[in-house]
Structures are given as structure tokens and as C-alpha cells.
Length: 99
Image (cartoon, rainbow, N blue to C red; front, side, top):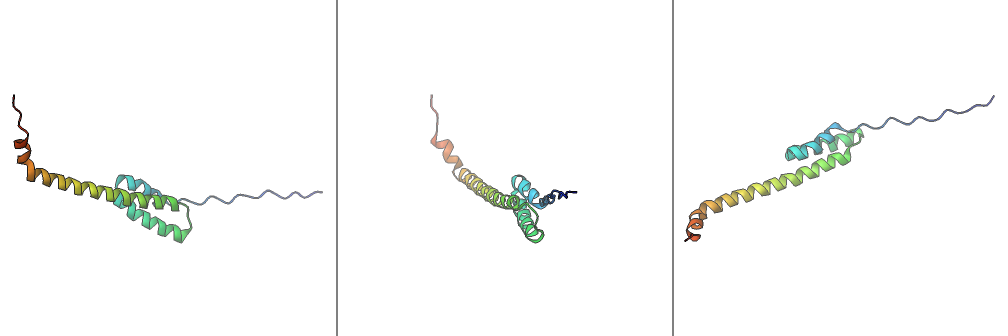
């Protein structure tokens, strides 16, 4: 009687960290939350060994980029409003239309 060894089983796949997924989603919705969740997710992944390190890093990086872009936009908006308020009367007096 011949003995045939059974095939090996694949180990179950690692779970993806939910906080890493949330970090990536929040980076697009509310960027500062993406930064916080990305940092928390990277620490959890380091401790638990779950998958999702790339997602957490992407959420962290995108959160930082979008937050900086938002801050630049707010600063430019404030400068533009200040410039318009300061030079508002000059705009109308400089460009007069005659027929």
C-alpha cells in the first residue's frame, strides 16, 4: 500500500489594518484626520504585524500634502482679500470707460 502525502495548506492571508484604510480615505475627505490616522495605523501595524503599511503611509503622505495645499490656499485667499480691500478704490478709478 502506497502512502501519498497530503498537499500543504496555504496560511490564511494577513488582515489589512482598518485604520490604514481609514487613513487613506480621510486623506481625501479631511486631510488632518488622514495624518493622525496614518500615524496611528503605522504604529499598530508595527505592533501587530498586519498588512496595510503602504495604505497607512499613503494616507499619511497625502494628508500632509493636502493639508499644506489647503493652508497655502487659505493664505493666498487672505492676501487676495487684503489686496482687494486695500486697492479696491484704485481699480475703479484706473479703468474708466468713455464712449
